[in-house]
Image (cartoon, rainbow, N blue to C red):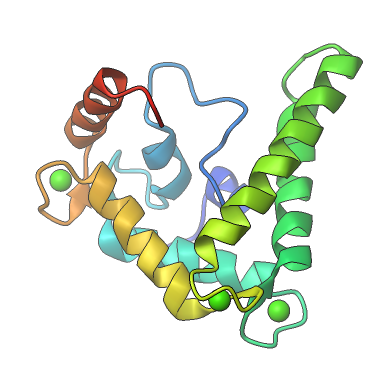
Length: 160
Ligand SMILES: [Ca+2]
Ligand SMILES: [Ca+2]
Ligand SMILES: [Ca+2]
C-alpha cells in the first residue's frame, strides 16, 4: 500500500470535498485522493482513502458512523482549513457555523435509511456515485481531463 502524502493524510475523513479552499486551478478531487502523486486517481486509490477515512471517523469502532462522529470529524478538518484561510475572525466563525450546518444536512442525505447512522453500504454507495460524477469518460480513473469536463458541466448547471 502506498505511503500517504500529508495532504491525503489530512483528508482521511468522511464528508464533503474541501469546502473552504480548492487548490488554485487544480482539481480538489485529485488533490484529495491522488495518494501516489501521479496526477490521477484510480478507483483503488479512491476506495483505499475512503476506507481509511471511514474507519478514522468511526471513533468508537462500532462499524457505523453516527451524527456526532460525523460532525466531530468534519469540525476538526474545518478548523484546520479555516486556520489556514486568512479570514477575519468573525468571518471564520460565521463560516464555521455555516459549514457545520451543512455537515448535518450531508449526514442526513448520506443516512439513506434514516436510522441515525451511516453504515458502510450507505457510505460506499455515496462514494461510487461521487467517483462516477468525476470520471467523465467512465474508464475507472479520474484524470485532469475528466476533472475539467466535470467542472465544465457543473458550471453549465450551477444549481449544485
Ligand atoms: Ca461509530
Ligand atoms: Ca443509515
Ligand atoms: Ca477517466
